Image (tube, rainbow, N blue to C red; front, side, top):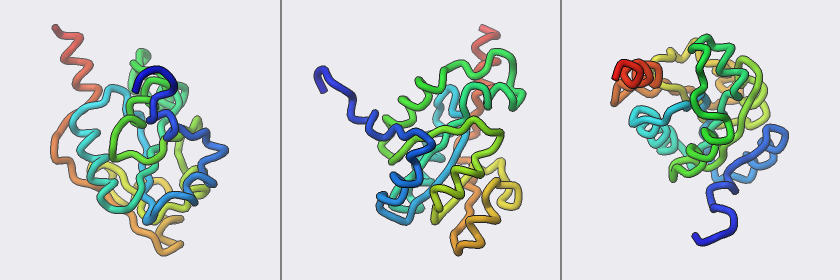
Length: 162
């Protein structure tokens, strides 16, 4: 595309508008969340697998302040929310990108009413935030096994060691 706004920016959705936009997506709607600070193969594989579970995928990103509260390190996130959101929105597997400043995405999950709630394999279903609410509505909760063991924290350690 030459000039103008990149097409992927249409996928960016403020949290206060996400319920309405989610209701317009082709179902079943899948929801996942995370920091997605430095995008790697593990991330994109998990997102593609999540999308394969439904007709649309909503990704909710932690805000910069929310990432800092997770204790990943004083220098995290490396990329700002604006940059992380743009990169995630550019992925073919992603239908909509929003964000949350709370410690968990529970309010967004309740607002979006996903048919399927997904997290990576390091999250057992019983610990996934929003699982109880999604299951109570007749939805599914999935913990996707890691196909490629990758970690942004490990990647940053490797970079710093060079």
